[in-house]
Amino acid sequence: MVNENYSYIMKKKSEYLKNRFSEVNLSFVEGLMVYYLGANPGVNQERLAYLSGVDKYRTAKFLATMEQKGLILRQPNPNNKREKQVVLSPEGTTIYTKCCKWMEDWGKACFEGFNNDEINVFLSYIDRIKNNLENFTI
Image (tube, rainbow, N blue to C red; front, side, top):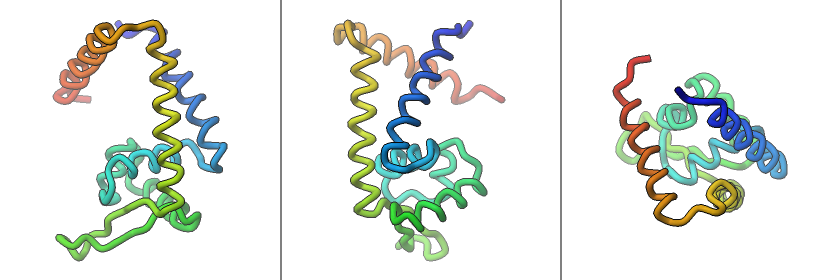
């Protein structure tokens, strides 16, 4: 039912983001993690793994590399002393700002020629699909 156009769109988005992330010396996954951390400041490693779709072990490895690059900081969670929150450093925040611009540019390219009503209808369909999949057993 999902056709090849969806696969094409996702492939183009991945290529676009890989190219943008490489401009700031980040891998694709590191770039996504910067984006998720900027949008969800103070999440823990487990939540970041969930948001990024990367398993916990690989998330830990990516975070260690990102910490060495000076992109993130790990801080104690004031509500749970055993847990660390992950936040962007000033350099990471600068890259997050660029990510937001890249995402905005991607959206503009995707919806060029669409009016606001058409965009809203499309986004409502996407929301419905997401809701349908929340209870779908894999």
